[in-house]
Image (cartoon, rainbow, N blue to C red; front, side, top):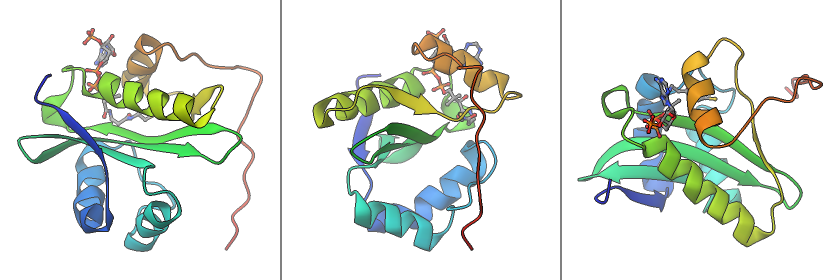
Length: 140
Ligand SMILES: CC(C)(COP(=O)(O)OP(=O)(O)OC[C@H]1O[C@@H](n2cnc3c(N)ncnc32)[C@H](O)[C@@H]1OP(=O)(O)O)[C@@H](O)C(=O)NCCC(=O)NCCS
Protein backbone atom coordinates (compact mmCIF):
# COMPACT_ATOMS: atom_id res chain seq x y z
CA UNK A 1 0.00 0.00 0.00
CA UNK A 2 2.96 2.30 0.54
CA UNK A 3 3.32 2.94 -3.16
CA UNK A 4 -0.29 4.12 -3.45
CA UNK A 5 -0.41 7.80 -4.30
CA UNK A 6 -3.56 9.85 -3.62
CA UNK A 7 -3.89 13.23 -5.28
CA UNK A 8 -6.51 15.71 -6.43
CA UNK A 9 -7.54 15.37 -10.07
CA UNK A 10 -7.01 18.19 -12.55
CA UNK A 11 -8.74 18.89 -15.87
CA UNK A 12 -6.22 16.77 -17.79
CA UNK A 13 -7.52 13.71 -15.90
CA UNK A 14 -11.16 14.04 -16.95
CA UNK A 15 -11.18 11.61 -19.88
CA UNK A 16 -9.28 8.96 -17.91
CA UNK A 17 -11.61 9.35 -14.94
CA UNK A 18 -14.71 8.94 -17.11
CA UNK A 19 -13.22 5.80 -18.67
CA UNK A 20 -12.24 4.51 -15.23
CA UNK A 21 -15.79 4.93 -13.89
CA UNK A 22 -17.12 2.86 -16.78
CA UNK A 23 -15.14 -0.15 -15.57
CA UNK A 24 -14.99 0.49 -11.84
CA UNK A 25 -17.98 2.48 -10.58
CA UNK A 26 -21.43 1.36 -9.53
CA UNK A 27 -23.82 2.50 -12.28
CA UNK A 28 -23.62 5.94 -13.81
CA UNK A 29 -24.22 9.36 -12.34
CA UNK A 30 -26.23 12.19 -13.91
CA UNK A 31 -22.97 14.21 -13.96
CA UNK A 32 -20.75 11.55 -15.59
CA UNK A 33 -19.61 13.56 -18.56
CA UNK A 34 -16.82 15.93 -19.55
CA UNK A 35 -18.78 19.03 -18.51
CA UNK A 36 -19.95 17.51 -15.24
CA UNK A 37 -16.46 16.59 -14.07
CA UNK A 38 -14.94 19.85 -15.37
CA UNK A 39 -17.51 21.82 -13.39
CA UNK A 40 -16.73 19.87 -10.23
CA UNK A 41 -12.98 20.47 -10.55
CA UNK A 42 -13.48 24.15 -11.39
CA UNK A 43 -15.74 24.68 -8.38
CA UNK A 44 -13.58 22.72 -5.95
CA UNK A 45 -10.15 21.68 -7.26
CA UNK A 46 -9.59 19.40 -4.25
CA UNK A 47 -12.88 17.52 -4.47
CA UNK A 48 -12.03 14.68 -6.85
CA UNK A 49 -9.37 12.44 -5.36
CA UNK A 50 -7.59 9.78 -7.39
CA UNK A 51 -5.55 6.82 -6.17
CA UNK A 52 -2.70 5.76 -8.42
CA UNK A 53 0.00 3.15 -8.33
CA UNK A 54 2.88 3.30 -10.81
CA UNK A 55 0.87 5.88 -12.75
CA UNK A 56 -2.16 3.58 -13.13
CA UNK A 57 -5.51 4.97 -12.00
CA UNK A 58 -6.89 2.47 -9.47
CA UNK A 59 -9.39 4.40 -7.40
CA UNK A 60 -11.50 7.52 -7.12
CA UNK A 61 -13.70 9.36 -4.70
CA UNK A 62 -15.50 12.69 -4.79
CA UNK A 63 -15.16 14.47 -1.50
CA UNK A 64 -17.84 17.13 -1.62
CA UNK A 65 -17.96 19.83 1.06
CA UNK A 66 -20.25 22.81 0.53
CA UNK A 67 -19.62 24.50 3.85
CA UNK A 68 -22.48 22.63 5.47
CA UNK A 69 -22.47 18.93 4.66
CA UNK A 70 -19.79 16.44 3.72
CA UNK A 71 -20.97 14.24 0.87
CA UNK A 72 -18.99 11.36 -0.60
CA UNK A 73 -19.65 10.25 -4.16
CA UNK A 74 -18.12 8.02 -6.81
CA UNK A 75 -16.08 5.81 -4.49
CA UNK A 76 -14.73 3.23 -6.92
CA UNK A 77 -11.77 0.88 -7.12
CA UNK A 78 -10.60 -0.91 -10.24
CA UNK A 79 -11.96 -4.50 -10.25
CA UNK A 80 -8.39 -5.81 -10.51
CA UNK A 81 -7.23 -3.90 -7.43
CA UNK A 82 -9.95 -4.54 -4.87
CA UNK A 83 -9.41 -5.80 -1.32
CA UNK A 84 -6.05 -4.07 -1.14
CA UNK A 85 -7.21 -1.22 1.07
CA UNK A 86 -7.56 1.37 -1.70
CA UNK A 87 -11.13 2.37 -0.79
CA UNK A 88 -10.12 2.56 2.86
CA UNK A 89 -7.20 4.85 1.94
CA UNK A 90 -9.45 7.07 -0.21
CA UNK A 91 -12.03 7.35 2.57
CA UNK A 92 -9.32 8.21 5.08
CA UNK A 93 -8.04 10.98 2.78
CA UNK A 94 -11.58 12.25 2.27
CA UNK A 95 -12.32 12.33 5.99
CA UNK A 96 -9.03 14.11 6.64
CA UNK A 97 -10.04 16.79 4.15
CA UNK A 98 -13.50 17.18 5.65
CA UNK A 99 -12.09 17.55 9.16
CA UNK A 100 -9.56 20.15 7.98
CA UNK A 101 -12.43 22.13 6.41
CA UNK A 102 -14.53 21.98 9.57
CA UNK A 103 -16.90 19.23 8.44
CA UNK A 104 -18.75 17.38 11.18
CA UNK A 105 -20.27 14.27 9.63
CA UNK A 106 -19.69 12.49 6.34
CA UNK A 107 -22.39 10.78 4.35
CA UNK A 108 -22.82 8.77 1.20
CA UNK A 109 -25.69 7.40 -0.84
CA UNK A 110 -25.38 3.65 -0.95
CA UNK A 111 -27.73 1.45 -2.92
CA UNK A 112 -29.56 -1.12 -0.83
CA UNK A 113 -28.63 -3.85 -3.30
CA UNK A 114 -24.93 -2.96 -3.42
CA UNK A 115 -23.75 -5.41 -0.79
CA UNK A 116 -20.15 -5.17 -1.90
CA UNK A 117 -20.20 -1.51 -1.00
CA UNK A 118 -21.94 -2.16 2.33
CA UNK A 119 -18.89 -4.15 3.47
CA UNK A 120 -16.50 -1.31 2.63
CA UNK A 121 -18.67 1.43 4.17
CA UNK A 122 -19.24 -0.55 7.34
CA UNK A 123 -15.54 -1.35 7.64
CA UNK A 124 -14.83 2.39 7.47
CA UNK A 125 -17.34 3.14 10.23
CA UNK A 126 -20.41 4.22 8.20
CA UNK A 127 -23.91 2.94 8.85
CA UNK A 128 -27.37 3.45 7.34
CA UNK A 129 -29.96 5.84 8.73
CA UNK A 130 -33.24 4.05 8.12
CA UNK A 131 -35.44 7.09 8.72
CA UNK A 132 -34.32 8.90 5.55
CA UNK A 133 -35.11 8.58 1.89
CA UNK A 134 -33.59 10.57 -0.94
CA UNK A 135 -36.03 13.13 -2.42
CA UNK A 136 -35.05 14.46 -5.82
CA UNK A 137 -36.22 16.67 -8.68
CA UNK A 138 -34.54 16.88 -12.09
CA UNK A 139 -33.47 20.47 -12.77
CA UNK A 140 -33.39 20.15 -16.57
C1 LIG B 1 -16.82 -0.90 -2.67
C2 LIG B 1 -15.36 -0.74 -3.18
C3 LIG B 1 -15.12 0.73 -3.43
C4 LIG B 1 -14.40 -1.27 -2.10
O1 LIG B 1 -13.08 -1.01 -2.55
P1 LIG B 1 -11.81 -1.85 -2.02
O2 LIG B 1 -10.59 -1.08 -2.35
O3 LIG B 1 -11.90 -3.24 -2.52
O4 LIG B 1 -12.05 -1.84 -0.45
P2 LIG B 1 -10.88 -2.04 0.64
O5 LIG B 1 -9.88 -3.01 0.12
O6 LIG B 1 -10.40 -0.72 1.08
O7 LIG B 1 -11.69 -2.75 1.78
C5 LIG B 1 -11.78 -2.19 3.07
C6 LIG B 1 -12.59 -3.15 3.91
O8 LIG B 1 -13.92 -3.23 3.42
C7 LIG B 1 -14.40 -4.57 3.57
N1 LIG B 1 -14.61 -5.15 2.24
C8 LIG B 1 -14.32 -4.60 1.05
N2 LIG B 1 -14.71 -5.42 0.04
C9 LIG B 1 -15.25 -6.51 0.63
C10 LIG B 1 -15.80 -7.70 0.12
N3 LIG B 1 -15.86 -7.95 -1.20
N4 LIG B 1 -16.25 -8.62 1.01
C11 LIG B 1 -16.18 -8.41 2.33
N5 LIG B 1 -15.64 -7.28 2.89
C12 LIG B 1 -15.19 -6.35 2.03
C13 LIG B 1 -13.32 -5.31 4.31
O9 LIG B 1 -13.53 -5.18 5.69
C14 LIG B 1 -12.10 -4.57 3.88
O10 LIG B 1 -11.01 -4.71 4.75
P3 LIG B 1 -10.12 -6.05 4.65
O11 LIG B 1 -9.80 -6.27 3.20
O12 LIG B 1 -8.92 -5.70 5.49
O13 LIG B 1 -10.96 -7.16 5.20
C15 LIG B 1 -15.13 -1.57 -4.47
O14 LIG B 1 -15.61 -2.88 -4.28
C16 LIG B 1 -15.82 -0.98 -5.68
O15 LIG B 1 -15.28 -0.14 -6.38
N6 LIG B 1 -17.07 -1.42 -5.96
C17 LIG B 1 -17.81 -0.91 -7.11
C18 LIG B 1 -18.19 0.54 -6.94
C19 LIG B 1 -19.06 0.75 -5.73
O16 LIG B 1 -19.98 0.00 -5.45
N7 LIG B 1 -18.75 1.84 -5.00
C20 LIG B 1 -19.49 2.25 -3.83
C21 LIG B 1 -20.64 3.08 -4.20
S1 LIG B 1 -21.62 3.54 -2.78
